[in-house]
Image (tube, rainbow, N blue to C red; front, top):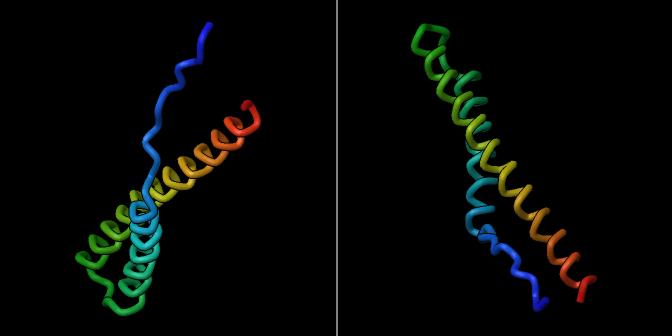
Length: 83
């Protein structure tokens, strides 16, 4: 048996990782400013709902980036130790 075919993975770029982190921070900051400075009306509740939605989706993106980076590092260690 020759070399094993390993599935290739698309690694996240530094720019994508940075974008995910900045997006997460920006979403939390926007939500905090909105809560602190806006009067409490129906449209405020809608604004906060959109802010929470943005924070949640950004969190999923950040979690994916962290997971991908950890998997890439683990694969690199495994590859180095197997050769």
